Amino acid sequence: MEEFALQGHEFVELSNLLKVMGLCHSGGSAKMAIAAGLVQVDGQVELRKRCKIRKGQVVAYEGLQVVIV
Image (cartoon, rainbow, N blue to C red; front, side, top):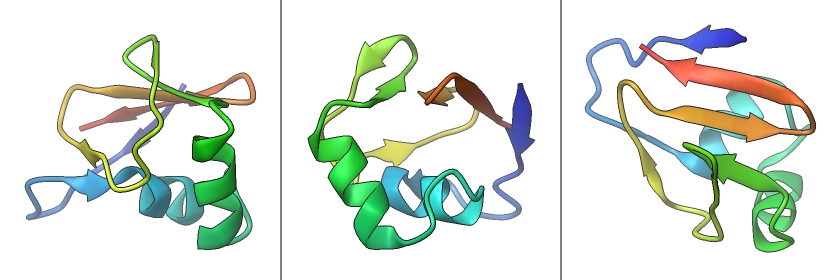
């Protein structure tokens, strides 16, 4: 499980998180993965590309998990 620190922000958009963490090589591929139902937030499939991910949430994609701190 990897960690992502918000550093002065209240949230990060789901597609941006996937791109910044290197789970997807571009924002476009992150949005396609989300639309295809391949991304989970807190154990539930998330289809909103701009979903606000906040501290304490866990994002899972392709067997990798990222916890927001």
